[in-house]
Amino acid sequence: MRLFGTIAVGIVALLGSSAHAQLPVVNEARASWQGCAYSLKVLQDADPDFPYYQPLYRISVQSEVVSSATCTLTPRTVELGTSKLTPQIALAANADGLAAAYSFGEYIRGFGNWVRIRIHRLDPSTLGSVKVAGLQGHFVPSNGGAGMPGATSLGELTLHSGYLEVNGTLNGNSITEDPATTPWPYPIVQGSRFVVIYPDFFSQTPQSPRFVTF
Image 1 (cartoon, rainbow, N blue to C red):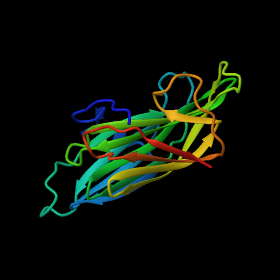
Image 2: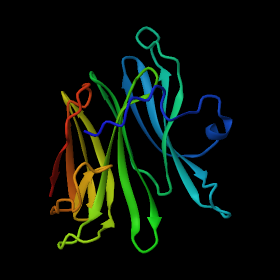
Image 3: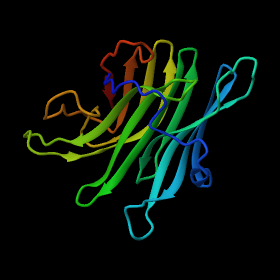
Image 4: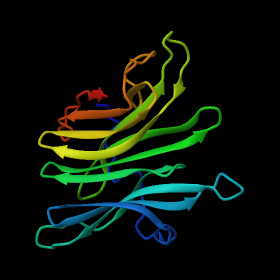
């Protein structure tokens, strides 16, 4: 597991931002935990780096109180990331905690779509990212020469007792953590689907993920 660090209250807090509140929601996933409700949303914005309209998708997580008897948090919204391509999202909760996953990427001329995945362990009270893991696909030539970026599309995020599972599809012949923890050339794999297991995702001791492709 790649530990990116503890982030107290997430990347960008959006409380009170009327501009973000007015953006259209193009996708949403929901989960509940101890009387609190959580939603992971994809908001469609305009990319400020272009003189003409190009979409920029903002991925944000929001909390709200359902039962004040068990949920004592202060509702808030935190932006987790952005994408120039339409993201796939997933949100899950169990007795261990709360986790969110999303794809993000952009089109690269001459290469095609470069799409990666982020998985966040979230603090249910603050929505801060306690752990962040990443996945990325690659095209690795058999001779070990220069490769090209691939794409990982998010399928499902599942929380089991003691571990987290992510599955999806791979466009490429290699998949690694993002950033990669192994040297180039990355191992070549077979198949267009992947399952990645993160042991003890909610523990304080990071462990390396287990990859299966088929």
